[in-house]
Length: 85
Image 1 (cartoon, rainbow, N blue to C red):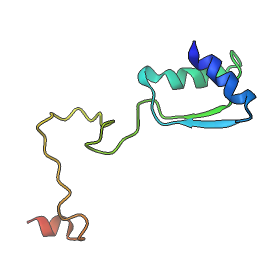
Image 2: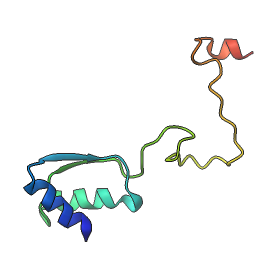
Image 3: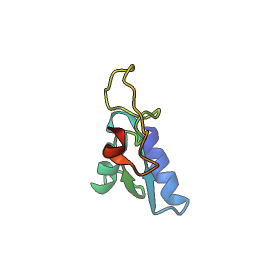
């Protein structure tokens, strides 16, 4: 398991806390649990599970259809909903 080896190497390099903002199949959560249960050695992990990303970005997993059009018109100018009418 690469994660266990890398966790140990990370700790031995002097990093006591690290974060991960995305991993497939919750592998980061499993690694964190293994470290917390003392099954393997590694730093304290701050994990997110699925990748974090902005709406419409490459990590967006909101399951909207690809032809869904998202617009932020009216947001930057402060008009909000009233400005959209």
